[in-house]
Amino acid sequence: MNIQQLLSTKVKEAFSTLFNAELETVEFQPTRKDFEGDITLVVFPMLRVVKGNPQEIAQKIGEQLVENVDIVTRFNVVKGFLNLVIDNNFYLNFFREIRNEKNYGYVEANADAQAFLVEYSSPNTNKPLHLGHIRNNLLGYSVAEILKASGKKVYKTQIINDRGIHICKSMLAWKKFGNEETPESSGLKGDHLVGKYYVAFDKAYKEEIATLVEKGLEKKQAEKEAPVLLEAQEMLRKWEAGDEEVVGLWKKMNQWVYDGFDITYKNLGVDFDSYYYESDTYLLGKDVVADGLKKGVFYRKEDNSVWIDLTDEGLDEKIVLRSDGTAVYMTQDIGTAIQRVKDHSDINGMVYTVGNEQDYHFKVLFLILKKLGFQWAENLHHLSYGMVDLPSGKMKSREGTVVDADDLIVNMADTARSISEELGKLDGYSEEDKEALYKTIGLGALKYYILKVDPKKRILFNPEESVDFQGNTGPFIQYTYARIQSILRKADFDVSVDISSVALHPKEKELLKELQLFPEIVQQAAANYSPALVANYLYDLVKEFNSFYQNVSILGAEDDKEKIFRVQLAKKVGEVIQSAFKLLGVEVPERM
Image (cartoon, rainbow, N blue to C red; front, side, top):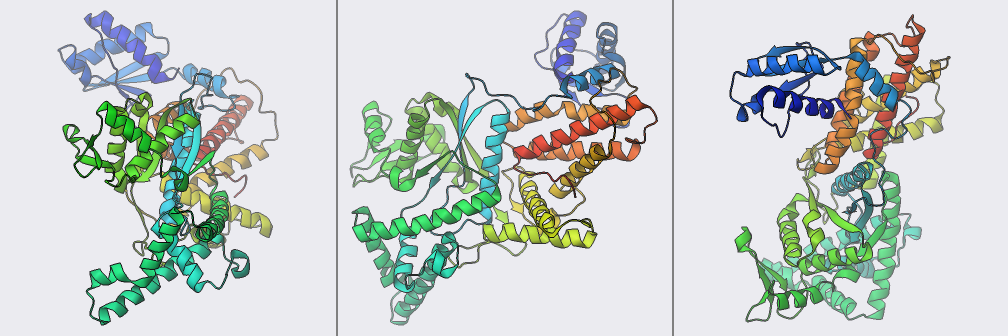
């Protein structure tokens, strides 16, 4: 039980005794640095339950706590804030409890644990992954890991958009201009090769539009009648009709893309438990719509199209089946959600990692699933996130100006290399060790920079800024971890001794207070689907450790008990850094 949970119970008891009234909640905050205290009780909300002077109420509660709660040694009141000083032994006992706890802060999922499915990545198979996909993958993967650490059972999945006119555009361009080029013959990753032909299609399409406009056609009409577009549309019709040659080409080129994606995912350090393909799911949901019509959830218009009226919920009317009986994206998403629960019968919640341009779509989807009577629809969450921009501006896939994910991963390692060499931090490393470290630092910088920002906010990503070894960055935290490992290597004495009592330095106490927050941070991050809470906790922990390191001699402590305790404390901080970084998908280097 952490200090807030323990004191919350005691404050409620004290309040009941003093004022014969009950408190539902108790609000705490960290004590400001300019006042004595370890934790501060905010008294103002109590005025809703009992009238009076907040300072007098705080004084009475403080006296009651000092008298009846062993761990509260003294207090002071500043206006409506009660600053409590906690006995050092409370923190020493806490440290003894967690010192040898392997996965401190994590909760092991039991047989009755809630199961969540987390969807992320979900790319198109006509181009490589780009910077926007990187934010998506990092967010989805991290949220999945955080949910696991909070005690949930988690399935990681994606739905691959492997059908449609955009796929046929790459296929047609390869057929027309490709000369049987393959990933092997070109030396290109499969997704890069297919993306090259997506760009080639767009170039040919624009040229044909320009030619038609020169011949006197209006631009809008030219865009519809460009021969290369009509060919792509015909190819899509053939695919839907099961044409053997078109389907064979589709399978071949999609496989190139999947092989390329696998390399990117491996380099990025993300993984999946299952895959769904739009080519398998695009017909799902039609039966559900038919069932929903019978139940009165949907209604049919005169043109035979099927709709749902959500105006009572502040939304609009939404089509779920076209007049010709074909499905729309909403139909497919309804069917896919239901199919996933059939595939994983223990699921009672899903998280969709999709950009904020789809906010309205998911409001509608979740509401439809609730109206259809699915209980698990109460636990659906859209992990909505903002765009990622670079100082150079926005990205456009069709024009081939995207920031490629593979290039960015390589560039991050290169940036780490140039900054590390400039700082001269890696003397004595072999070239192989250096290259591995550059990748660890570069990827850590990328992941931390993106995940420390609230998902809903737009990001301006600056590679050089992210690899700074000072400030709120991945490398700064990694460097602190490496510093701790250096201390542990130099400790030439037995650090496994149980230290029952030691005089706590104020910096040690602050560090213990920060360590105690970690389990609650994991739970909060899971409840809010926010890796940013873990990232910013990590930065606070590391700042506190560095303050401790600069103000307190660890290996030079004169008292053996103090020396052992400080090494043990440093070791635990290192373990928590590693555990928290694991939730963000970031590796830690033993040396830097």
